Image (cartoon, rainbow, N blue to C red):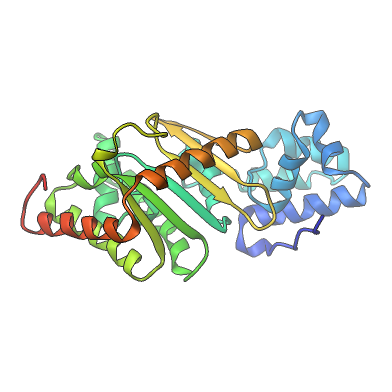
Length: 280
């Protein structure tokens, strides 16, 4: 097995904990499986903690300090980085997304968060929280836009999105906002930064009728899938589940329009919105 590379602790809040966990575990002469067994987690899960793709929860940190003799290191640092700018149900997925090498996503009713411009994101959050103070909405929007800086790198993570036609036709924020959002997506596609496909209404029933899906791959850790519902989200690492979700995404790709056809449709719908048409 290839030895995991050392992570740069300054690049990711979890990288420091991951590096130190691996060093402390190896110093104690324990395998990943042996360290995880008393916690009823797999060796693969310990590997994900060491690779920085999973969040270390406090109960794990306390156990690691006791088992590895690290004098409260993990407890102190876990508490220090526990706060997140993201909602609780999404925080761990966002942190994993930040170190992913590949992201594949199916979006049902919305343009994916990584691809949303400011005005679109603000209208989405205002719809979610109609009575929230503007400062709270601004903070949520800022966090979403910060996430989008992942795409500033020209190649990593590779992003392949399949979006339902409904996401194009629902006029979030009105026609001008939708025109801007769709042109933004089209621009990323034309610059070859993302691969985008549209799943048309004409496709009928499909493999992901139950909701959105995100798959993430990493350089030094097993892949993960993320599924969500209102105010709920779950990051999954079970190999059989991830394989099943991967097949679902492959089926969606097969039913969707080609990337070239999808780009043409996105730009056509954007032009309709530019002319003030709410339902192109």
